[in-house]
Image 1 (tube, helix red, strand yellow):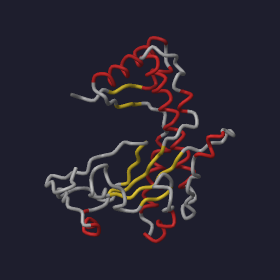
Image 2 (cartoon, helix red, strand yellow):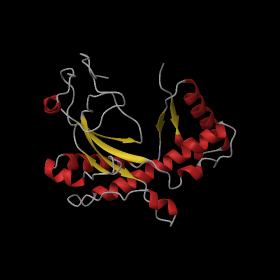
Image 3 (cartoon, rainbow, N blue to C red):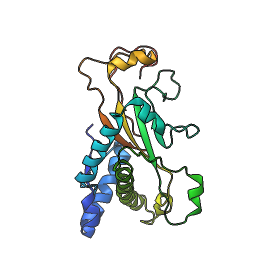
Amino acid sequence: MAIPTVDLAQFSGTPKEKAAFVEGLGKAYEDVGFVAVKNHGIPDSTIEALYSNTKEFFSMPQEAKRKYEIPGLAGQRGYTSFGKEHAKGSTAPDLKEFFQFGQTVVDGDPIKAEYPDNVIVSEIKTFSPIFADAYRSFENSGSALLRAIALYLGLDEKYFDQYVHNGNSIFEGYSLSPDKRRAEIGHPCRTARGHQPDHPADRRQRGRPRDPCPSRGPGCR
């Protein structure tokens, strides 16, 4: 079954276009569970800057990156080094390193006291600003999608706004590691030849690509 594609620009179009978008998005989630979104409103310049800054950070020496691995935060902000994270129920470490950026509360909301501060990368002056910009861009696009979902469910269009505003979501940049690093952590899984190493990518909250693992040893997903 193909993943449906919807056009977010329709949501701010004519009433007919808006209704078609709401129906298309709702049916996609109801029937398939996944959807591709075009004209999502996130500028290409933001995406390009995000990738270039992420790649630059993960290309830094390990000792420099470790300055941003903050004990006690469980990886919820800042850097998490290669092999630290495990999938639930598995002893095999994930083959990536990552950097997490969270909500920035600027309106005096007392919820700010519950969130750790974001970790600022000093070596790359544009890193933290572009993560903050990307976070807000994805949040704005996500808010529009949630408004459409609310309408599809027969709720007030702004029903989910209260949960999005200063909500506790996380934006993550990560780098998948090449096969040669598996030996460092004794990982049992061998990837197929031709697997692209060190590909910086970004995900919102809980999305996770699966690592290709045709020869499945213990702990391989």
